[in-house]
Image 1 (cartoon, rainbow, N blue to C red):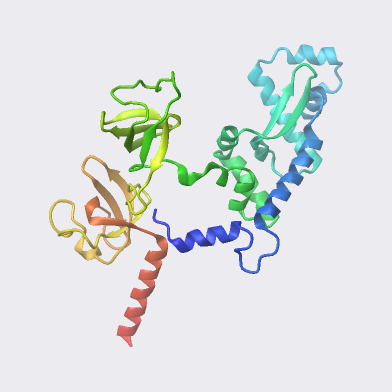
Image 2: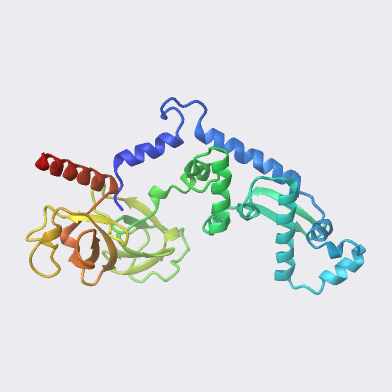
Length: 328
């Protein structure tokens, strides 16, 4: 979806000290200080906690057993069952200690079992991939939203302090149309083979599937490699990004005969904005839903340009003012 410069500036003003209007302490500093304080609470609550005591707390029936009896009972569990009991024990321990974060939120931290000492280890934030996997789950992220809201912390700023936003350099993520360079160390080979491509060759990204990129090189079109094998080289500032479902579009003023031919822009919606509900790459068409009209309409993507909510709101406001003037 299109983004207006004003929206970007507003986002940065919330996050960067000195740019906010009348700001005192940095929002980022506030978020980071609260996260550090929370980690200290969790460290005190969990680090070094004997496994036996934790399990007995979660399952009171075990509290009357001797250590050897408890081990004999637990030995009947497989690894998954045992770890499920550990997770329950951690949740109970956190709740009983009065830590404000809901137990699901702890999944962004590195908590382990020391099998030799049979105690719990709290080791701060987990590695980025694990944090992001936990963050993608609703319960974990929602628990942090509640925690941040209760402390007046901006949620996007919280993501920065947890290393889940700015640290990822999202603006460096490769998209269709980017120019990339094949970059492998001497002796290494691409995951899916060289084909006709050569190390150091540059090409244009034509598609992405997870961590795999499809690239058109001069030596070979449709070459597939991973993001780790390709370095982002160049991006056109004014290139129009690929349209996807959810994007907002309006009539392309530069299109030739947009109201004629196959998949025309509906003349009745010449001044309207619509939302893309589906994309057909083979026909180079988009299905658009307008507020006015019956159902979705298939339109040639050449007849549409991406826009943003702010532009749509401004246009609707202007149209409303014009109608008011006509009535007067």
